[in-house]
Image (cartoon, rainbow, N blue to C red; front, side, top):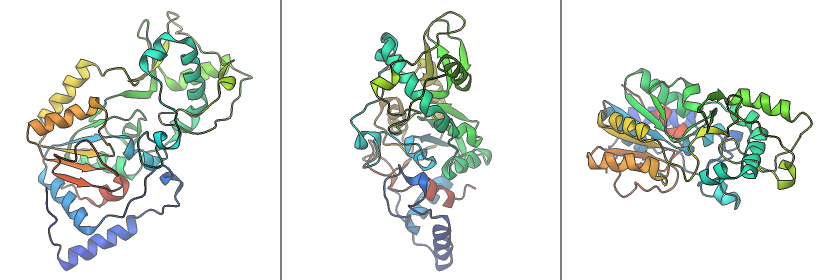
Length: 315
């Protein structure tokens, strides 16, 4: 583990000043889905600063925990994640493909949730990672999120491991369209259909009853009549071999790995941490709660991404 180094009086005062002025009140609406945690200790700030300063080509992997501070709920956070708040579970890939009623339910819920979900904006953590890229500190960013917030922030050296909800494609012919265009098709097909959400779920989803979705009309592909699906990897599906190989190549070019806002429970992301461990790369974790990497990480910080990352100077 990186050990906390003693700060000089002046540097400690500067860090404490930053901590006070970057702290965000728990009453902020954007923290509704963020688990409670203590503010950063100056020694913890210094540990991450040392880790980042020692890296020349940093590989960053982000998860849902980086976007909860933008008001998007996640699945696994203690007390506030979807699994803690409800017994509902995300749709499985096989169910979506084989069941017309499952697709109707999915798209009805997504139609209602889309205006709010698509309006979410990057938070401080997204902007910091964008700046690290511009400075040449961040070599490549891989996000497990499908919310497009890194792209909205201006990141360019980024791979969306699980795709992006802002795109839709046809399972038949592969034609791709923007999700915003599909929203217009939904509105045209369902001019009198209205439903009030009973709760908010991750990935642009909301809670609706079976009765609410019964009459919702779902368009087919305009080119071949095929099934339209969001360009995301649903649970039970796999990431393409081409994308996995590409990310492995970017990791091979890197000299350290930072995991931000992810418990790394899903193997599609966890495999890259295993590869980093095999290459003996130092790994730092910034996540509220335990992760699958805790036992072999060089550094683990149980803190908010948006509170700690702005305190780090990328030289």
